[in-house]
Amino acid sequence: MELSKELLIDLYTTMVRIRRCDEKVIECLFAGKLITFYHSCQGQEAPGTALGRSLRKDDYLYYNHRGHGLPKVLPKGMSPKTFIAEHYGRATGAAKGYAGFHNCDIEIGIPGMGGMVGGEATLAAGTALACKLRGKGQVTANMFGDGATGRGPFHEAMLMSATWKLPLIWCVENNRYQQWTCISLTHPKEDLADFAHGYGIPSAVVDGQDVIACYEALQPAIERARAGKGPTLLEFKTYRFRPHVEGFPDFSVQCEGGCRPEFEVEEWKKRDPIKLMEATLLEKGVLTEADIERIHREATEEMEEADRFSADSPWPDPKGLDQALYAD
Ligand SMILES: Cc1ncc(C[n+]2csc(CCOP(=O)(O)OP(=O)(O)O)c2C)c(N)n1
Ligand SMILES: [Mg+2]
Image (cartoon, rainbow, N blue to C red; front, side, top):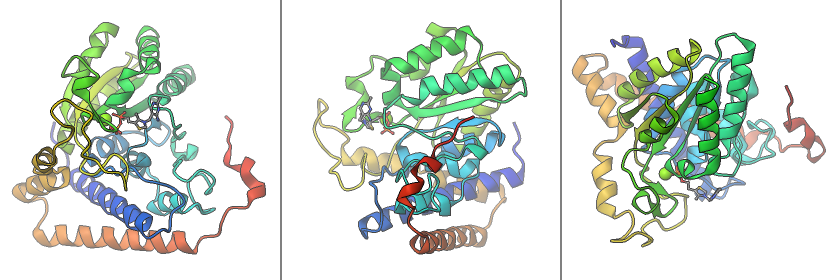
């Protein structure tokens, strides 16, 4: 699959914007400006970027707590202003500042998340059923962590989606950890994509650090869903560069042999998705060093502006709590 120059630049720029936005949220958090905590998505920008950029505006996209959806909602069209303002708890935020990190926007097909790991799976089956019944070629995608595949809702919804041939793209970001527990203690097999065999649906294991590989893997899965042929399970092998949640020590010892050794983090940083794409685009002659410098500078300025916008935004009116709810 040959991706256009414009698309390659767009995928790269989107990942840089996500990284800068993530860094800005962390900076604001430690400056005491936010009403919430934060689960950084650094290192995991590629799968969500590829997914968000592949979906239509009227497709549904569910995300989990990692980056509070940032690497999915920004590529699907949410502004960093809306995202950061929500963390500030301001009325201009995604959930009008009422929810702190709940980055929903139904106008662009983002119903939001709940606090329960794997909880979006059954909701995704619900919107996928709605997509099918409407008959407009809409699809639903659900991107979640390896931890969610250990929960009942994921398997119940997988079974239903396979049996009813729902237009669903199941995307697991396998970063090998669930908070402070290594996957070797929770899952018997290396590849979570193998779960698909039991449900009789196609699957693939994808290099989650390579945004081009992610994009290419998603296209047939989305086409299959749009064509009414049913769901696909894609497993993106990836890694988070920062602690599970900011401010908590990360190198605990819940795993045999010690959990998440520092050298492992350093090894994975050599496969930073942004650096990998940068090298590819320089090699292909799609971007110059000057272009890269400009893209980073513009992303930094965009996030500074989003920070100022958020800080200057009004607090929500406590009486308007019901306005943050929606029904369809
Ligand atoms: C049902 C449920 N159990 C436990 C938790 C606490 N919890 C929050 S995030 C998390 C880790 C989830 O791991 P994973 O799905 O792999 O996502 P990752 O953090 O690695 O991105 C856990 C256990 C929760 N929110 N919901
Ligand atoms: Mg995980």
